[in-house]
Every structure is written in C-alpha cells, then in structure tokens.
Length: 292
Image 1 (cartoon, one colour):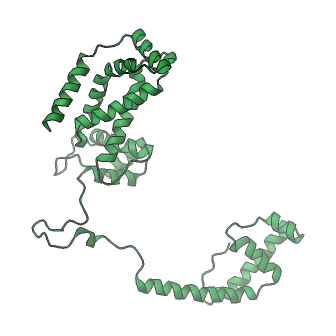
Image 2 (spheres, one colour):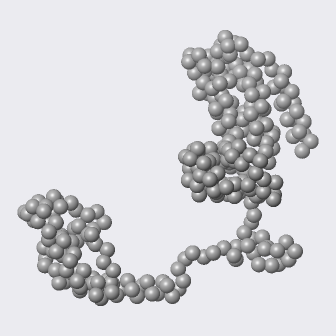
Image 3 (cartoon, one colour):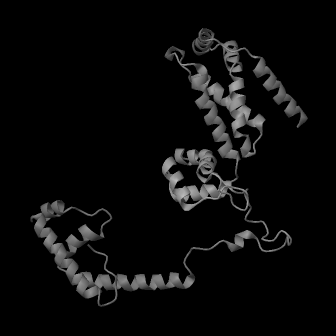
C-alpha cells in the first residue's frame, strides 16, 4: 500500500512538473506521433496532459474506488485519444482527449462499483452518473431520516424525462445507489449467523404445480374442441382461416384472393363467416376464441 501511495505521489508530482504546451508545440508533437510513431513525442504530449487526467479522476472518487486506479484508467483514455487525434482539425488536444478520458473512467466505475453489472446503454450510463446531482437539485432541503434527500414520485418522473429513461429505471437506480451490495447467501439476522439466507425470501413467480397441470388439461381440451370445430368448415373456409388466423405470418386478403381466383372482399366475407361458425361452436363449449 505504501509503495502504491508513493507511486501515486510521484505521478502527481511529475504531472505538475510537466510544462503546459503551446498550440504550435502541441500540434508538432501530435504530427510526429501520428506520422512517425515517435514514442518521445507521445510521451511528451501525454505527460503534459496528465494533470487533466488527475483532475478528472478526483470527480469520481465518491464511488469508493482508488484514485490511483482511476488515474490509470484515465491514462488509458488519454493514450486512446492520442491514437485517434487528428491535428489538422485545429482542435486543442485537451478538448479532444477529455471525452476519451471521461469515457474510460466511467467504464471503469461501471465495471467495478458493484458486483451487479449495470449501465450498459447510453441512457443507463447517463442515469448512473447524473442521478445524484439531479436528485439533490430536485429535493433541495427535503431530507429523510437517513439524512439523504427524500424522493417524491414526481421527482422520479422529472429525472426520467430529463434523461430519456423510464420511471422504473430511475427507481431501480435510486435503490442501487442508496445502499451497498448485499449477498443473497447472507443470513437474514446478523445476530444469528446460521439463520435463513436472504435468497429463501425471494418470491417465486413461476406457476404452481396445480396451475401447470390445469393449464395443460385446459390446453388439450381446447385443442380437441378447435379440431372438431374446424371439421365443420368447408375446405375453402378452413384454408382461408388457416392462412389468415392460424399461421405465424398471416397472408393478406390480396394474396389469398389471387390464389383462389376471387376478390379480396370475397375472401374477407368467407373469413368472417368461418369465424362466426367457430364462435357458435366454441363459445357455448367454454373454449376461448381469439380470432379477429
């Protein structure tokens, strides 16, 4: 630990000692690196911007991660920026590199802040990194018993609209940011290490055994009734109904009309008559009819 802290102090000291680059000198170094792969030019260019990396790393310390690790990740982003930088665009390197440094640090935070992976989409990332700020801005002086700003339902909706995510996403992220990760294999009671694990209290949303059996029996009964009902239709009615209602990709009236040599209006009439026949047979028998 001591050696790591010493290394970090040396890195900060070297970053502060590195001279700032004038625009022309910065462009010259970038051209040397891009055109000639001059390692000395790359080192001088990146070393002059390490103070930017360190300054940005301090903004993410409240996520409980090592400042040294954040600086290292920011340095990776700085090198990525140097590899992609186009000096002919006349954009200062610090402006261009800021995005890559920030993106590298944010990815590191998302990978290591929690054992539960989250924030994979751009909207989720924006929610993760902006929720605390927006929450504090909206709640103002309102405080809960824990000392944290108390959130109202309207606050969730406002944040969701601002960040283009759902209210449910805001509520879930707010819950995640309000406490540390908890293992489902931990005991419910801290005073009784051998007590029931938390995972035992998770609700099981799968159907009960009797519900599965009942659904299977009902499915078989409905299938038999439908097969009997279809036998009451003419061949053309059955063909149209299969093509229009029972296929995964229903055929259009025009396609069936061309196939049978009749107009699409006639196809529609035959289909409606076939559905009405099925309804008269199936509905009194208690079978659902989901045809349109």
